[in-house]
Image (cartoon, rainbow, N blue to C red; front, side, top):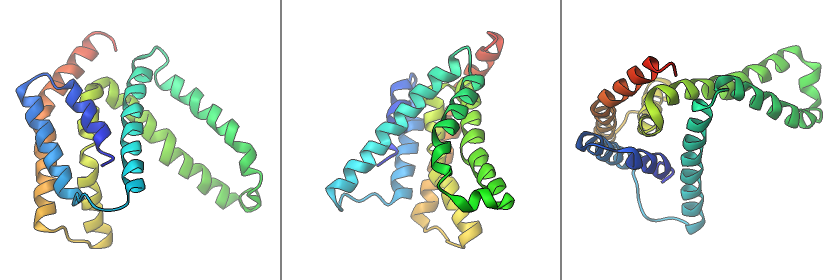
Length: 190
């Protein structure tokens, strides 16, 4: 259900029959991969929808930052500000400050889980646009399934394989417009 946000952003940006076809394939693939069922706790559904709304907000605000004059420099300033705000909390975690290896590990986790992915998101948002980036996020369940096969030896069911294939085809179907956006963006100095 949390994919409602990215799918809504992709739908709002769809301009052609090809875009809508790619979007429908991605939605169908996500439904098959996610084993969507309408049972469970109402609070869980609320949280999942909330996650989707926040994810859509991240895409919209990320595109605004990516298009701004500061771009990745603005992201660096924001991450430094976040580090300053959260640093006092780190003072309560004594073992980190006494172990150089643990401190380096904590820094690596921060860089690899926040700084690098957000910087890459900025580059991709500029090149692909908001709706293309949102549809590209549909690959995440397929990527998770592939990692599950390699790392955890979880073999996908035939339905999940069809879902993965649909998501890949959806991104392939929609890629021609993204290439056109990237070419235009490079030509205009963006």
